[in-house]
Image (cartoon, rainbow, N blue to C red; front, side, top):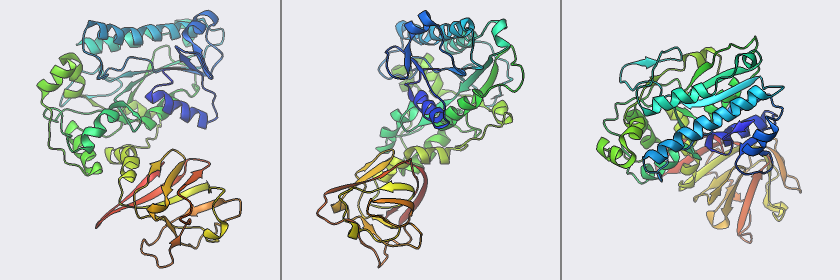
Length: 425
């Protein structure tokens, strides 16, 4: 059961849980498949479930909202009211879930250039955002009679980085245009986490408790173990994108555009350490900025390559109209001598003008008339003399689709420059 399941983090969590074989129900304002509405929750109660997660909340960094009393009210009500409703539904359920997870934030920790905060650090509200966090986490507390069966978890998340939303969605364009730069001095700490790791941490927290749950909330800092500053983040993003980062944004500009109470999230920061998260055995996929940013901008980088080499592993399927004699009787090497037109989650599309070529390799992959192949597609030498035209010019557009999201290796060639990427499309 998930609230906020249609948002940036919610989509990633839903995908992860479904891949693990779980059924996910989203609480939404609108009815639909796999959803229940808030009205149904209030009238019929919480459906039987193993775990509940609250990801709800008005976007703090919404660029379309001015920082005024109306916006502040929405920030509080969208978090506290929904959390209370879900907590009350859990408490009233005859069979409450074994885990109840709230994802909040690290704004509870007072900004500092030197202080380090773990889950055990004491804190008291000091500004409007820390006050929000205090009331938000308090609204998730369950009655004592329910805590005997339901584990209560709070994940305090840093800035969530991912290609489909969050902070990166607003930053990529200016950085790609070469207009990126530090915020203020850039010395402020920048606690962050990749969206895949946050989803993984939530899934980890949803696991049934081994012993009788604690009556108090278990707190985990949802941040990467790397301690980075805004300057380090800025320089690394510029390096991965191969763009300069020479345009710093002065503090007064951010305060004017966003309001000083909101801009503090970006202009100041905290050194947050995921001590308990690591002690619980959680394994990060992206523990450092380099690996996280390469995964995030990888697809955008592929689209800009002047020469692209893709090495795929996965079961593929070619267009039915593909002439059988145009495919070598073994696995192939794909060489994109021009840019790829489209890259989606399970397929990529190219045109004949892109001069897609293929060459035989030594793998055991064999091509059959039904155009299905199980094996690897690889490239060893861009200048291979054995390369031949993969599909004839009579077909204008071709798509190779994968039944599952394939793992790939990408060699992007630009003149004398060479870069190798690995990840999932």
